[in-house]
Image 1 (tube, helix red, strand yellow):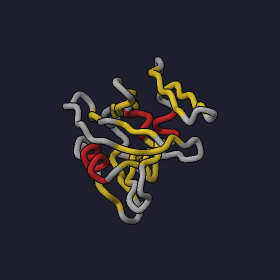
Image 2: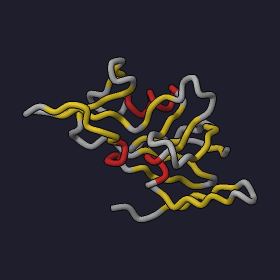
Image 3: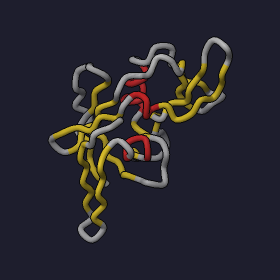
Image 4: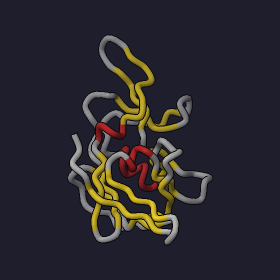
Length: 139
């Protein structure tokens, strides 16, 4: 378990919101508190909560904004293109994507899954029960 001290969306202002969670290589999505998820998708044009899909969806084009998550005194950037978990429908004129950032509702803590993990160098120190995050150059 670790604490993320805040977040920002795109070039928006930093939000000092404490988020307790775990890093889990067995979870694909980034599962966060509803307030954080809603703040993110408020900045994604055309996004909506789709009860049929069980989460937020948005038009695949244009690319959604980056998500910056706090780690210690720094932050890790999750590029908007990484937040596209999957294309759920396509037509000649548009595509709809399922977002990689979704609600942790009912879990009791956040889960920083592959959407977050592939955006950074992450070291698990099981002996000392610690985790380390470091930025990396992303393509």
